Length: 507
Image (cartoon, rainbow, N blue to C red; front, side):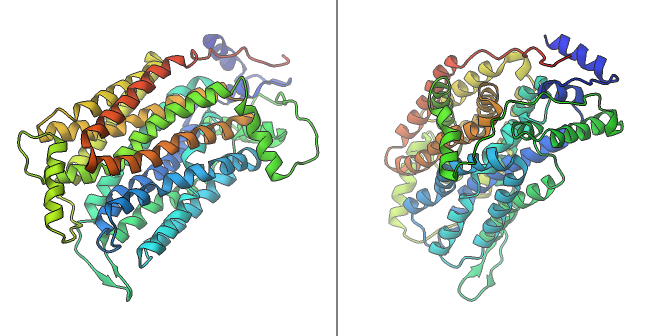
């Protein structure tokens, strides 16, 4: 079927098609080229920004704990703020994206997140800092989820799986940039007196972590709206114009040479515009009953496992790694070193917000290594398949978590702990299934809601890990490892990859 589709595409690339054709066929004729790649990279930057901001807490909070007078318990709660914001607002952003447009809403939400994130760096105390970070978190849900469906809607169908997987692997690069930026900025020794507080390196780092939101939003101003979204709203001419632009850029031909002249319009019923609340119910209700309910639940559970580890446990990675590397323990497991350091901390009450340079170096190298591994594995997704990739990621990282309780060599512990970002490889396949399972008019809401369910794992994981690492260290790694292995088993329930559908047209 794919071969037939490719053949038909090459045949019509120079012939005018006067009759209406399906939007997927039209995208296939428009082709794949630098235009698609450019804006896929732009959309990937939103995902990277949405990773950098919350994961950045893992470095900002330890460095700011003395200035803002934070306890470990408060750090756990504050570290979960971005994910609370995502969970609370995912429903609303999903509605806005499906009713007001992908492009407009993602630009607005990202600009707000970036500006509020920058302002938070200038807050004098813990309360005002938390308030600004809470407002920032309310804007992250959109750029953290929408790019997956957005990318899938500007690409020919045969390129979606591999592009989403590679894009997802690039998102892991965001995790790699977090320690890299921290390594460059936190060791700086400056203190600028702002009156009520001193502007120290961690505040500059907070600004750096917020800038990708602003950069990605500015770049997308010149990008296309999703032609599939426009078609779902009955905007035939606008959708066709975007397809012409994609074709012109990819084929190096005038837009008017695009052979498709009419698109097959979906059935749109003209009804009285409902209220926002009614519209939200109408948009989400189909997802909460058969045949979509079981897939929503499964996607939500899998994303819960991913984010509880990727964001929850990972938030404590620099702190745990720093404690172990500076603990001086030999022939001791990580948990034994942590317990020893905890006793020493109780004896010495002086606040210490310094992070050892080894922590930056190991984290940076490990994260970039994970990025390269992720890019390599993602490029093979067409060969090994989404389901195999998903199961493999869950199993490997789950086993790594459990092994942390047994290793006594610091370097091996650092490798196992630093492998956590690879869990992000599983997000792409889960969302690729969502793009296949849910129809266009419900896709934005479906991805946002399933990501919302997953992000509750970030909230629970951050707080649970923060409490258990000190109180029951071994249980922490057994628990997260076991959860990932359970997700590997549940992944077997996902449907088989959908074969390309027959081309619909009136030819």
